[in-house]
Length: 77
Length: 199
Image 1 (cartoon, helix red, strand yellow):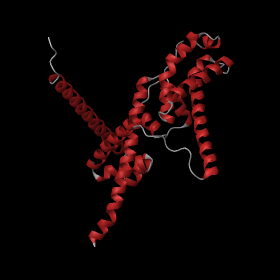
Image 2: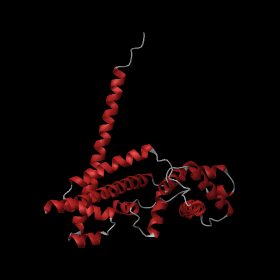
Image 3: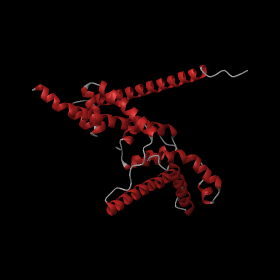
Image 4: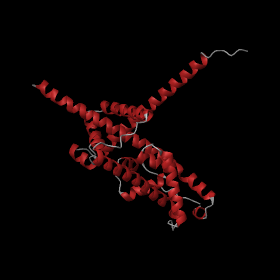
């Protein structure tokens, strides 16, 4: 049985999928493609890892900045 | 293949397995995590085969979309069951029943290493670029809003994002190469210090 694989995901779409920023229709299209496309699954896995790492790192950076803020105010006085 | 599955021909199921196992596994793991994954994949195939045999798939050429729909419903079912179980237990006892499963140490270590790399990337960026990334990845602001608020062009925004990603990849590859080098040197040392075999 011939199964059509459809177009591969570009980098922007892959990241939007990781960020859950796509429409239900587009998500369905991508998830159907991912069922049989190994290279796009690898790209999505890498993108998921990157997005998760950036979120966590950004959370920590934000906290550090917020903690440093009162001290900076005190120092300024 | 669909006709063979409907006719209970094992080769039909074999082909279905061959085509979809990895993809279904990937989807289920991404949505639900690695716990009991083999059982969940098995359940998915059972459901798909049963519904094909019942004649629910009327157009065989829509098999891929159909598989995705079935697996998606299965995920929704697992989530619904977990939510319901948690609600019932909380009602009965005021303490949560569904404690987090024991984390996978290897997975946790990889995630921590990735976060450390992302921290290195963010900390070496100019303050403004870092702010762009924090707004995008943490606060989930849209590119349009970030560009307006920070007076950036779409190209500047894209460049900031792609440079950070390239740096992250570069650091990740360097880490991987270091680990490979370490493994190779340990292997060489092990071979060098291995006791000579008696001739």
